[in-house]
Length: 301
Ligand code: MG
Image 1: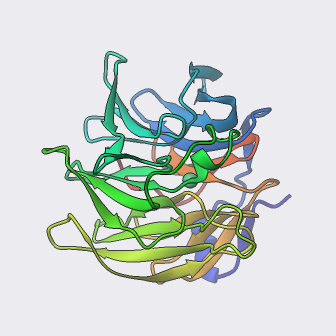
Image 2: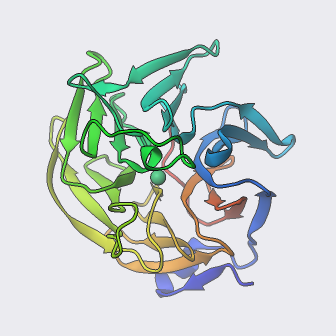
């Protein structure tokens, strides 16, 4: 199967004619939350309903990094390279210290428990931005059925004070998120209520306030079809790569669909990795795929 679908001639230069979709891990239950560790040349990713975090490397293949894992979903790294994890089951956000100790960064807002942190990004100023929908506490499958104490929201955690603040509260189901390369805009996926008959499935774009602490006006950036978006990543040129029902869609900074990477199963989350951050790792249902592209992700931490 040809992996690339070119819808705009501009996409031709984004992809490699002989690059193939490679299968790196199979037989998992539902994959999410990939994060690349360039210093260890490995990828960590969540096998969510199996309550484990897996590790993949070119030389070592697949191994178990953490189990039980609190039904981990999204991951990223902070400015010091430490692993940041969203836990559905424990309804909190954690940081793994260099010695392996786990520090809880956020679990409550104004005395009430968070729902189930879903995805997380770190800005260059060290602030941690994450989404908190209800998906992880709606079912036992994704972390354990529990009562919600708060409406869904998007939060910012201040690195100095530890203060948690709400940056958006008009989402039914905030999901993946990603800054533009200049960090002047933040993209947030809206996937609505889990069991809605007509789910919303768009990506919203917000301007970040000049002090970098708040979101200003937002707009619908792109409607994803088929399926819905979940995880998103920008490349260095500001194009947005989003998961979708038929694989990965690449959107230009104006929100136009340029082309696709088609996969046999729907993609939930993706990330750039490899030596030049030009290899896309795709969590697609039970399978981890990778494919080289002719664009580079935004360097981090
Ligand atoms: Mg997600």
